[in-house]
Image 1 (cartoon, rainbow, N blue to C red):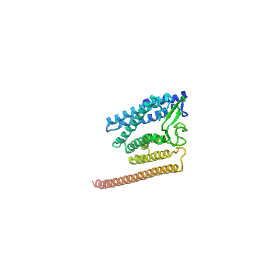
Image 2: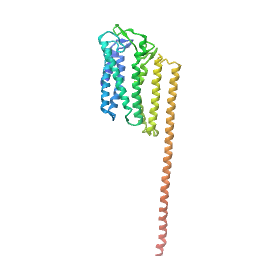
Image 3: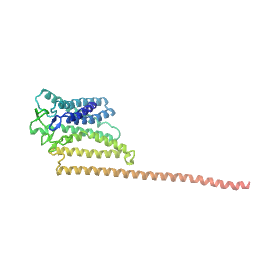
Image 4: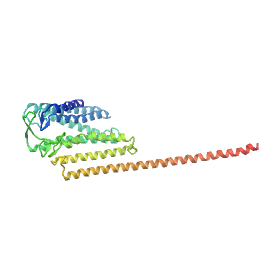
Length: 343
C-alpha cells in the first residue's frame, strides 16, 4: 500500500503541472497528492511497527493487511474521481459510479478507523523498546484514532447547512451534501492545505491527530540518540518524562484546534479565547519540560557527588591497608643491618 501511495504521489505531483483542470479553484490532483503523502507516512510507520511487536503477531499482521486494503480502496477512489474531474467526498450525484463509489468509499473509511483502533488497543498490552518509545507509540496511535474519529463527524457537523450545487472540472453541476467546513461551505481555503480561511475546518485537528505518531516516535528516537552525549538523558525515566511532556503539548494542540474548529473559527483567525488557550498550553508544556530537565540535572549531580565520595572512601581504605605493610618492611630492613654488622 505504501508503495502504491508513493506512486500516486508521483503521478499527482506531475498532474499538478500538466493538468489544468480545477475543483473549487484548486487542481483536481491536489487532494490525491495530499492523501498520498499522508498514507505514505502512516502506512510506512505501521509497516515498520507491526513486525516488531512480540505478541499476537498473526492478529497484528491481519490488521495491517486490512488497513492496507482499506487504504487502497479509500485513496484509490479519490484518485479515480480526480481523474474523472469530479468530487470524491460528499458527492451526492445520481451517476451510478458516484453512488456505488460513495458506498465503497464509506466502507474504506470505517475499515481504516476500525483497524487503527484495534491496533491502538492491542499496543496497550505490549512493550516496545524503552518506556519513552512504548508510550510514544501508544499515545501516537491513540491520538491518530481520535483524529480519524473526529473526521467521521465532519459530515454531521456541516450537513445542517443543506445540500448545495457546485461545478466539476468540466462545468457540470454536482450536488454536495456536507463538507469539511464548520459554519461555512468548502472553498476559500489556505494555500497547499486548502483548510478554510473563513470558518472552522475539522481537517485541521484531523491532520494533527493522524500524524501524531510520527511526531512522538521521532521524539523518542531523538532522545535516545542524544542520550549518548547528554548524561542526564541516559535515564530511561527521564526520557519517558520528556516524551510525556511532548505528548501533553501535542495533545493540547489537538484539543484546542478541534475546539476552535467546532466553534466555526478558522485556524489563522483565532479569537482571544483560542489565543489564551494556545498560550496557556505552550507555557505549561515549557514549564513541565524545564522541571523535568532541572530534576534530571540535579539527580545527575547527586549521583556524581555520591560516586566521587565512594571513590574517595575506596582510595583512603586502600591507603590505610597499604601503610602497615610498608612500615613493617622498613622495620625489618632496619633490624637486619645491625645483625649483619654483628656477624
